[in-house]
Length: 176
Ligand SMILES: [Mg+2]
Image (cartoon, rainbow, N blue to C red):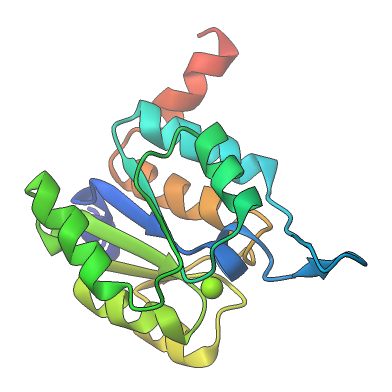
């Protein structure tokens, strides 16, 4: 019998991701020219490609505008990407409306206060392991791994496993 949480995850068709502290560890590396560098996790990348292959759409919303993030998002084939907007709830509502999806068909993975609004909208609010306490309190699922260190992969694995699809997607790589 699926748990209540697994029933919520089974409905999810779209996953919204924050960038800093979710797709990255939240670190901002400044060089002497004042340019910022960020670090992404390659296992999250394969998780995102796997999700897309399975028809679970990935959307990235970030309050900070950064050319490196735009490049990573492009590499991952994410077409729905909004940067530089701190109020994310209207963005989530707009994406869902354009696709004809309900809030119950959406999940959101966040780490900090700017994620509280959209997490209150979606059917499956999720937090990374090192999210601030107020965000963890809003989440129905909290990853065991921190942001930028596999949390996104874990969230995707949880959703696709609840849908009975994750093991089959791995089988593609075993040659089975
Ligand atoms: Mg964040």
